[in-house]
Image (tube, rainbow, N blue to C red; front, side, top):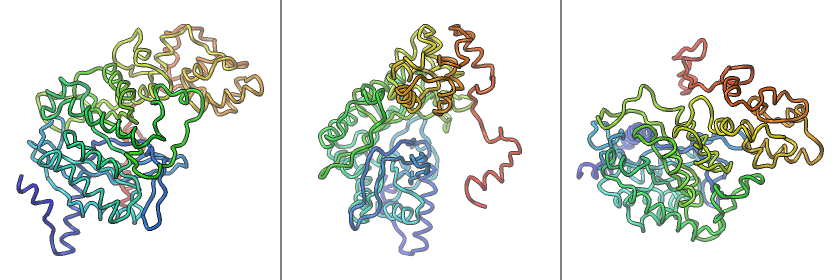
Length: 468
């Protein structure tokens, strides 16, 4: 470990050599961070103060799309990929023979500011392997963030992955400097953690989550709303914009999130979503991220799937959205069905097919909550329908004019002039028609670039990377 720690403090006196070293580290540590997931809106709002650099908008971060269509990006990097842990699924585990590197706090801060000034990024997503022990690693991360905030006066978005097992005082200090914190749950059960990540435990992860929740409640009273799972706003009207941060101490205004690896352990979808539902209610998490397991190590404890379970990951995100915004429960999603989500249809369609007694729904009489349960109708469409029918009775053509997408919804709605109802309430017939790839009904398919006609790898690589 002495050599590991020494590499952090070592810095060449020659500017060109030092520049080369930083970019070598960036190459290694940005690649090492590619399995960390964050594709959420920032959840915080902060205008730049006089003399500071950058601000935070509530619109979104990290490979996400803002309300005005902008793609917002951030520097996603590990502080170091040296790690004392030996998790079976992790590329950076200590037993792997991989290229290692570590930034100094000064290097990381300067790199972030340089990228920001060149308009490459709008924020920082910082994680790390466990270097020496959790406390030492957290101290290095805090030092990096403090340099950005207090020396460089950086007011932009920072998402910090906290290190489980670190001293609570360090977690609190970090939370006063960043916009969002996350502690990865990694695997959905204690037994899987013991098998695949023996250095970690469920309690070691949930205890700091609880502390962060309590600190957030104490120091962000203006954000202490009901969680999304029970909020009436989620079903009765548009989502409210985030309020500006209050004066004084502001602890992780963007809240906390976590991540689970999907497919590395045997837990089914119902188990995973039950855990997510509990985390949303008890820990008031902003997001649970699902990361399809990608085999990067040869280990007899791990499965060897023919391809990453990306469609399963997609279905979990769809179900997660129903839990958070559409007032579904896990029990409803899996009622009278298998413990795994269907691969042919999204979870809302599967719920509708299992409840033919609810459909078709009269678009002019159904309440807002029932409209949200119609496959193909989202929050905005349901709101438009409720507003428009106050003026007069809606027809099928009126729904089209309102911009309601009826490719799937038409099978579950009744409106004057519509063709709905011709299938009756037979779930099997509905399922066959939805799978038949009839006009407007598309069966989900996991695509690759090779599916596009005229695909030429060298041209696509130039277009995607910008290296013409």
